[in-house]
Length: 181
Image (cartoon, rainbow, N blue to C red; front, side):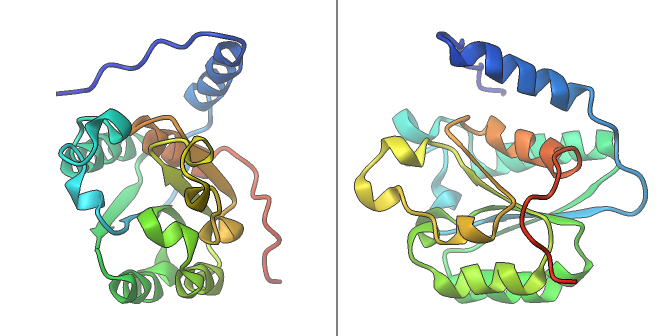
C-alpha cells in the first residue's frame, strides 16, 4: 500500500513541482545499468521506528517502489541493508566498481563514518545520499553529513519518495563532484 503524498504548500511548492516535471521528462538511460541501493543502521526498522518522522512505509516496501520504477527505466537495482558499517563498506567495494551509480541512506553513519566516506570516494561512482527526514531541521548532531561530502547530491526531507527522486536524478542531473581523471 502506497503512502499518500503530503500536499505541498508555500513558495517551495512551485520549485518542487518544476523539479518533478523535469524528472518526469528526463531521458531514459540506455545500456546495462546497475544502481546500488544501500541503507544503513536501523533502516530495517522503517515503518515501526518513529513513523511520525520516517513514515509508515517499510524498507521492503520502499525497495519495491524503487525496483518498479527501475524496471520502467531498464535499470537493475541491487538492494542492501546492514546495521554494520564494515558490511556496507565490503558491499561497496565488491559491487561498486561494476555499478553505474549509488543511492545511499547511511542512517547514523552519515554523521561520523569517515570509513564509509572514504569507501564512497574510492569507488568513484555517481552517488546520491538520501534522507527520509530533513536532517537540517533535526537535532544539531544530525545536521552534519561527512558521507554527503562524497555524494553528487543530497536529497533530504521528501520522505520515502526521496529514493525515487534519487533514482531519476542519477540519470538526469549533471555530476557536480570532481572525478578522478
